[in-house]
Image (tube, rainbow, N blue to C red):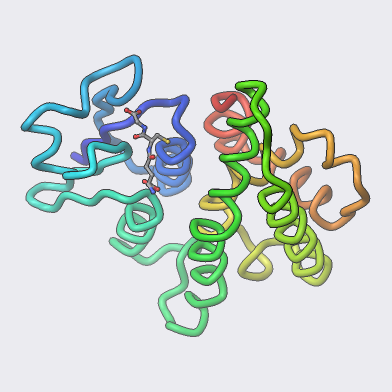
Length: 199
Ligand SMILES: N[C@@H](CCC(=O)N[C@@H](CS)C(=O)NCC(=O)O)C(=O)O
């Protein structure tokens, strides 16, 4: 059986929990990370030298870095969340890399600065707004990021989408993105692992 090292209130772990539910995969959870099991032990660092969650162990295979974990888990067996052809995969994959590099980091810095009552940078807010505007445009033509159905890309971006709508700036009109968030809200896994589990 798969073993997941992570915590329910970690956005990067939450993506993995949601995907595993979608895939109907059973797994053992070893609660790990801030407030739970330590990540600075030799045993944990031997799995992930960066001491971060999530980590997934599948027999002798150990995977860290949440989007790599999503790709690994979705790629183990054919399923509708991760197309088998390269062109189909690229439709979602690009959003996953873009969000990890260009959307989540400024959004995280912005949220943390506001939570700590510290000054935020205009560049971070501008990057987030530019990002959600592009998402809104893309989603005006299709219900999900990779096309007609839910894919790994939607799961990967879901914490950032959820958190965007908790910012006051989300009052700006982005109708396709709002409709997309409403679509995600119809999914049990999104509600349980993302909306209700993450601050
Ligand atoms: N880029 C990494 C980031 C991993 C990361 O920063 N994880 C956080 C939780 S979301 C963590 O391990 N924090 C320290 C801890 O919980 O001990 C990924 O996507 O997996």
